[in-house]
Image (cartoon, rainbow, N blue to C red; front, side, top):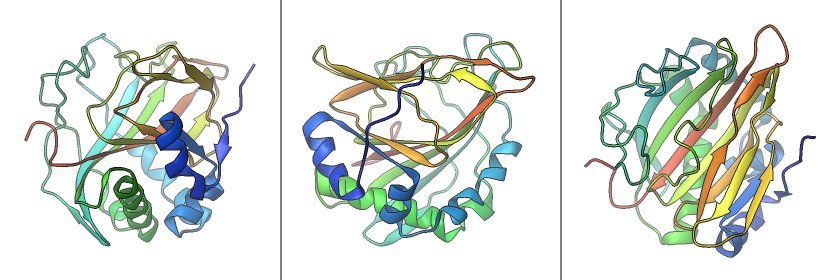
Length: 242
């Protein structure tokens, strides 16, 4: 049984993040927040078909493809930074922490899209509502988890925090798979919530200081199956790793 997520209106997102540490927006809510049309977001989807393999998986799997780029959002200004490695401390990623991981950058056409700019700046404004007005260091990750090997693991590191201020997980596409249930838990308590994101461009927002999260493995129900996501992280004070 697939449990539907508890979606909220964009204007409720900040209050929910303060109150329970997470919020879910439907695709239309994302469009309202970012000032764009759904057609503009859907036009970005083909770029997921060309993601190169993630060659850093320590569990020996070949189920993940990705691209990665970084930005700084200051007020209504968005600047892409020189390409850099993705780095996390082992305290936040026991499987892949402590190592510099160099991924191919995102396609220039995606980064130049007005909807892309609208999404990143809208979430920077939300971050400032929660944590105070300041520059936000944004890491953008395009992921495709496939089932060619029989199973795909969206979060091979297990339930975790990312070591940032705000995490935004967009479900971009879900084709021919079962599983992939999202689970959110209090970082310092027993309460939790589980549901399955299935609507293209629906969004899970997480206050990374207050909750931990994971997504269960996916398995194929068709000849080919995959789950595409966009993960944006917002961090005050600089990128992890300096």
